[in-house]
Image (cartoon, rainbow, N blue to C red; front, side, top):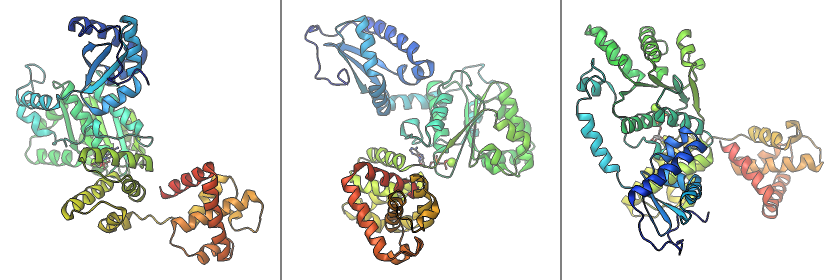
Length: 474
Ligand code: ADP
Ligand code: MG
């Protein structure tokens, strides 16, 4: 870690100030080329290419990147390597300092101008600028890659989306993203569109919901403008259709979609599709469409984990510039498990409430303000589920949860299950006892005490319990 990001580390040997910009750029070119060979083209394009090297001062290479997320990523993954490679060129270089450059506003301004200007002649002769804008739905400015938090459940979908956004050539076709409500499908699609618009504005990206697609199609039929409709879509470089489950069972729309899809794929244009289910699970979709949808890369946004939810909350809070006690965030991440939209909504409500009322954000206040949301998310874990999960975790039979066997190897897991039943359900001690082979409530009480003791004396055991609890809470 010693070569990273610390302005205090300076080498004495190079008291000379700034190196000439041209020289620095040439050095950076050599370094980044070596890095490109080491890490491959995709990672290079994502992380290294956006880096601008400003200068070298007192042995420190000062570099900038467009976003905070990028800075953190580069510091964690590449900065040390960059410093080492640079040392091969210039031995005095001691470290690399990565800062965030503030050119987003400028870039956004440039974007608008660019998009209002007609495209260079010859790019897409069949479409005028106005119809180009008309066909795509508006993009949410918050739905960019930088605001997308990834972890185990969604890292594959995230990586696939980034790949599509960064690729010069179509890497797979279509990219099919699927997953439950509020798990980030639309966010990823918008992020792809934003990024392509930013990096290659000449490419024509169209994003719209399957519902809109159908609406326009029906409208075109009514107005006898189906030729225009077809042209509009068939001159697109990247077509993204969101929530394609909507056209399941709608034959003529599917027919049109299928033809559009084929025409674009055959011309090497990128398709990105989302749905709430995998292609094969979409009911009411034509077989040939399903098989085409399955042809590309199918990526699943899995249900979130506690860790991912906490990460998302932390990132949202950082953007809100409000302080929220970590305990409250942990509480929310534990309790609001259904989807990210609700998690976000919950967070916004607490913040708004505390600002209005001028009250501190505490767990109690959160429970009060969000009681409806919390109740809806209160997925009732059953004792049966607990017994099943615990039995499989400790590799014993479920029947041992009810049996009279007292061997430690079964008695301990049984106690754990009783403890978790007490923690995670609203059942009383006698009720729990009954579910464990008709045991007495004092046995349950003893189990709870025993497990609590073990948790404090044995960190490994405590971790096990925590893991089980998280799995059960979903
Ligand atoms: P879907 O299209 O899958 O129903 P959305 O993309 O609309 O879900 O996501 C719902 C909300 O949750 C959006 O505000 C989105 O920004 C947010 N969200 C979902 N997943 C993430 C994530 N991994 N990181 C940050 N925000 C997320
Ligand atoms: Mg969506």
